[in-house]
Each structure stands twice: as C-alpha cells, then as structure tokens.
Image (tube, rainbow, N blue to C red; front, side):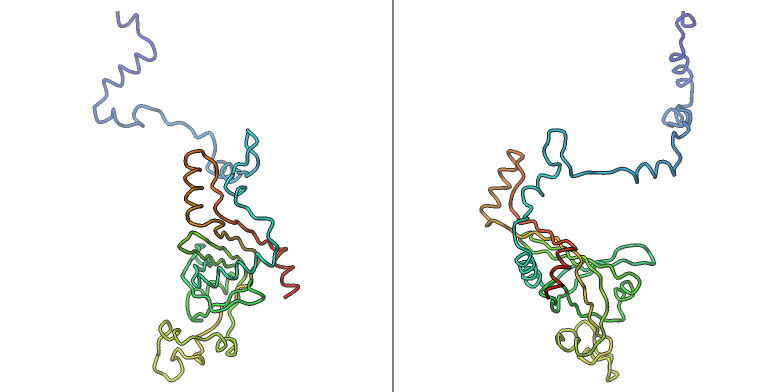
Length: 255
C-alpha cells in the first residue's frame, strides 16, 4: 500500500526519518546547498544602490512630517545666526567629531568652547597640540561640533578646522583652568600657562549648520507630544533651522 501511495514528498520524509536524530536538526543535512543567485560583489552593489527619498509618499503626504511641521524658513539669516551663536555660547560644551584616517573611524570627544569669530559662525577651542585629535585633523580637516542641552535643543556645525599656535591668539582666550588638563611637567616650560608651547587653538570655520530650538514652553510641548501620540499628528515643538553653504558665504562677505 505504501509503495502505491509513494510520492517524492513521502519518499523524502521516509529518508529523513531514517536519519540519525543528530542529523534531523542540521539544516545542511536536509536541504541541499543552494547556489547564490548573486555574487557577493553584486549583492554589495545592490545594497549600495538602494536609495531613500523624503519626497511625497503614495497618499501625497511628506515621508518626514516632523521636518515639515517644524522647519523654519521664515527667519532672516542674521537672526538665524544670532540665535545659533547664543545657543552655542550658552551650551559651552560640545562633542567634537574628527576622522581617524588610519582606522577609518570617526572619533568624538567633549570640548569646551573658548570663543566665536566672524559674527558667531566660526568656533575656537583650546587644545593640547600633542593630542590625538590634532593628528587626525592634520590628515583630514573635516570636522563636526554638536551641542545639546537638557531641553532637547541641539545644534550641529560642520566645517573645516586648522590648528593655530599663534601665542597672541592663545593668550587672548587663555583660561587658567587649562592647567588642570595639560598639567605641569616641571621643566619650566610646559607648565600649562599661556606660554606653554603645547597649547594651541582649533579654529573651526563653518560650512553648514543645522539646529533646533524650542518654539513653545514646556506645557505646550507636552501637549503637542500627547496629541501626536493619540492622533499621529507630528508634534510642532521646535524651530528647525538650516544654514547652508551659500548662507555662510554671504555672511562671511559682510563680516
């Protein structure tokens, strides 16, 4: 009777049952190897060619409604930059990100803002010229400085950096607290003072910036988030602003 009802599926099942129990849980013992449809290189190129868009989705609504609800394109450039400079100076500390050319990795560390220049768009930071970040900047000057406060306001400044060792600039913005970070090597020279040759200045010249500052008080923000949670309406709680490269060039031309 079994032979009459046998089929390819029952034959395979019979063969599986006859196998040792240890092989029943081995996928390779049951399923024959399948030749990959695409080579590794082809699969990589397919992944790399995958694209995403913030354009309209199928129902005509923006794919990123938060950005649309919060983007501020009405504020004049001078006010945008003044608000950014005020925010950066109030935060004081940022995460500075550089590129390690040797490993290919990005590296971030906390830095204290020493001063701003060019009407607020260029940033100055004291540094030990013997630190790793100066080596990274020597090989790749691209840099990002990101600021954040407890209200969730943030700023991201991208630019190019160079290291200044001019003693007048160092002394102009020098702070005695630098001694706590450089230490006194007790050789009469490297003492953490304003004449210490290890102290330099990282000057970040802005190319673009993005930032968000709150547009409502705490009660208004909580209400917006609560409404969005219930209805799916994007919360309009921030002034999301962008300063592009052309804006920066125009600002430099007048400052």
